[in-house]
Every structure is written in C-alpha cells, then in structure tokens.
Length: 225
Ligand code: ATP
Image (cartoon, rainbow, N blue to C red; front, top):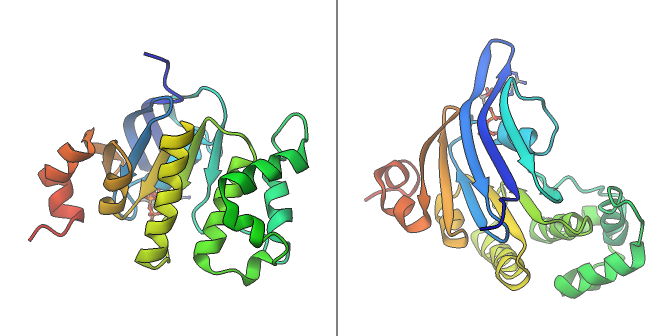
C-alpha cells in the first residue's frame, strides 16, 4: 500500500481555553476520496486549517505527502478579476511558473471554464465560481484536493453537477479528495469512505455504506424517517 497523502494523528487544536479538536486521527490514501462530515462547530474548519498549515496544532501530527490544494469555503474569488486571472493566482505556489500551459491543462479538464475565461469572476453564478475555485486549485497540480463545503449556498442541481466534476477528477485522474461537507448524503455518495466529526472528536469512521447505515450519521444528518 502506498503512503497516505494526508495523515493526521492525535490532532489537538485549541483557541485559548476552548478545545476545537481533541485527538483527531484521519487519513486520505493516494487517489482516494474521503468525506469529513459534521455539524456546525464540530471542528471541520479547524481541521482544514491544520492540514493546510494555517494554524499550529497544540498537539498531534499532520503529514501531507505531495501537494495539497484547497478549495476554500465561500470560494474566495477576486471578483474584479477575470476567470483567467483568478486561475493564474492559483499557480503562485508552483516553483516554476508555467502559466499558459497550466491554464490550458485546466481548461482541458474543466472545459466550461474556457468559455468563461474573460468574464469577471464576480459576475458569475455561485456554481460557476465554485468551478473557478476547482480550476484555481488544480493550477497547483495537486496530489490531493481539500474541498471545504462544496454545497454551501448552492442549489442541489448545481451541487450535483459540481460533484460529478469532482468524481471525474477522482476516478479519471486519480486525484485524491478530502471533502468537508455538512451535506452527508452528497459526501457519502461521492466518497468511498468517511469520518463523522462531532464536538472535536471522530464519532464514527468507515466506508460510505457503513456510515450511511450507521446510526451516528442516519440520526443526525440523513433525516432518518
Ligand atoms: P462551521 O461549519 O460552523 O464553520 P466547523 O465544524 O468548521 O464549524 P470550527 O470552525 O473548526 O468548526 O470550530 C470548532 C470549535 O472551535 C467551535 O466550537 C468554535 O466556536 C470554536 N472556535 C473556532 N474558531 C475559534 C476562535 N478563533 N476562537 C475561539 N473559538 C473558536
């Protein structure tokens, strides 16, 4: 088995005296799609920040092998810039700037972006902006994509379409994905495996089928009938 692209163990994150994550362990294997689901305040953003190096954990270990690219919550476009300029900004982490070639590669993977390239990002729909955020992350030529709240503020059909693009990137190109989602149904449909985070701890972990059948997810997130 190849080493995981993301390996988190014993992760503790504190804000002052408040403990946001209390001993979290999680792995994402190469080419794997993994869901992290949980309600507001569970600690999802803290985990993303620890994995992307934005915050320093109080304890534990975060190991990323290869390159991780973030698709941030709320998409974070530069609204006044064109789609193409927003994409270019995604390449800033690359050691060698290969702008035009990288942009062409992204347009090949997400052809709809090519048609939007000269539009101002701020004039696009939420779904289109999320697509730009995917493209911008792909500019870093990542081994793993960390997608924070894919479905936030988007209509179900738009979300489903974006999820299919993620699925194609995962199955077609072997890009690993860590999908942070409040929408458990969407996350478990897209990902083979997942974790349920609650109050800073992993309450359940397993295959998507196990989690969907398990009471932890069914009760809390799938609206068990
Ligand atoms: P949401 O979906 O609402 O963003 P989340 O699952 O991402 O929630 P976090 O944002 O990681 O959760 O927050 C986890 C816990 O840490 C919450 O109880 C939150 O109130 C607390 N917290 C987060 N940031 C800070 C901060 N800067 N100072 C104090 N407490 C914080």
